[in-house]
Length: 286
Length: 112
Image (cartoon, rainbow over all chains, first blue to last red; front, side, top):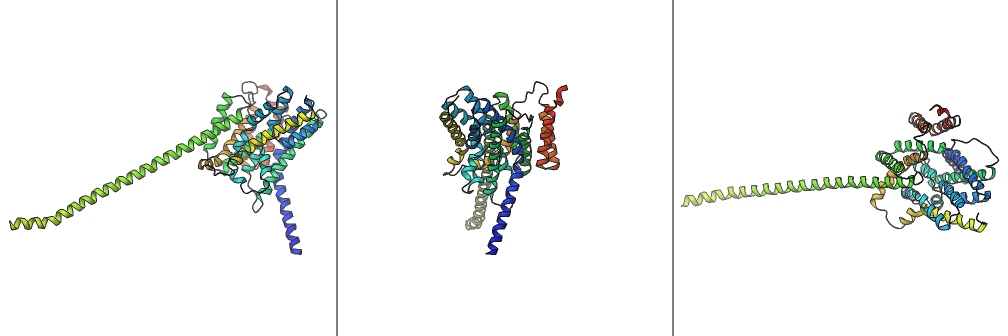
């Protein structure tokens, strides 16, 4: 019994450690989501809505840019269809996030629906770049990261809605913490992956969509464009590989044919030599 | 101004639309085998998307008006340099953020 208790305590400690590691991982998001969430709450408050709506939205919608868009649409008096279409378009980039998490999330258990629900830009960035501590549960670690980020966002937005007009903090520039986070995670991806082409694809797609499209649509457009570039390159690689294989097969076939011809020639020669004595004999007899 | 019920319905619609975009790939490939091409894409998407998120963070920078995005580019350079050098995420991120806050709050590049 005592052993059992110790084991449980050990597991509890490990759990606590895992939570601490997850918390440390999410600190940059905490520092980014508080000012961003406050900005959202402040805007919603300014549009004349009670802070409880900031809480409900951040709890059930949980999408940074999506919620800013919602405030703009609320102020513009948009209809439900407009809300639905605008939100679908703005957040469609998340569908691409899921594409690269299919394997990571397979067999992760009952936290999967929540992880999918809570898949913001920042949580996606952390989940795809951070390694699960050795010997720890992946589902727990991912859940802690996702839930902590969610909590920061809710706290920020409620703070902003409730106190935004009272507090006069100068948080200018603080949301740059998220830019810095993305820069660091990009470099981590550079270290952990051999592939270099995705970075080239990103610069190309990013520059093109910044020039050709409005800054609001830039992210979705550039992700679609970049994915197409990745697919196109992969297909051209496969095509050249196939060509090389076909060439290989053709040359071996040619060699085999040549060998066949040689064999036939040898055969004829041997027949020739075997005929020779017979021919000589016939000649002699004549 | 929407009343309580309208507001709750609106929030429900936004929540559903957002969740749909996130769940789509899992719903689509939940029961069928993903195509082979997807395996390659799956590996290459995260680095590409992360760099695109960095570029996205710079979308509202006014490149043609002073200070020409120099505070942003300068800070990103410092963050990247520091991270390549020390490879300490917290150090890189916080140095960068504090530096940027100082740069914009004290308008350091106002001479440009």
